[in-house]
Image 1 (cartoon, rainbow, N blue to C red):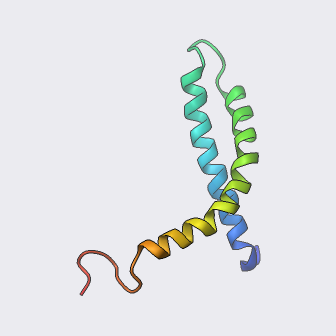
Image 2: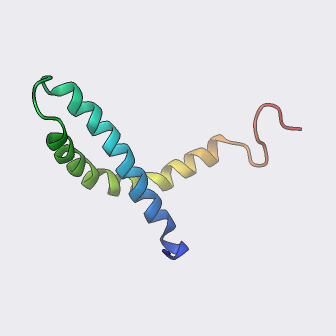
Length: 82
């Protein structure tokens, strides 16, 4: 198992990998002619995107957490809280 102190970096790695895989797949699918190969160009685009997405998530995550904390009220769970 991985020590908990690496949790934020592992979260960023998994999130950036998943999101860049999805977005690069959609962009590659939309840009290639139907008869052209898909998986090779997709994997190439994904690895390039992931190289940029991982540090971007590492930098953006703390800012996003602060924005969420600023936009939400502590101790409430939604519109129907008691």
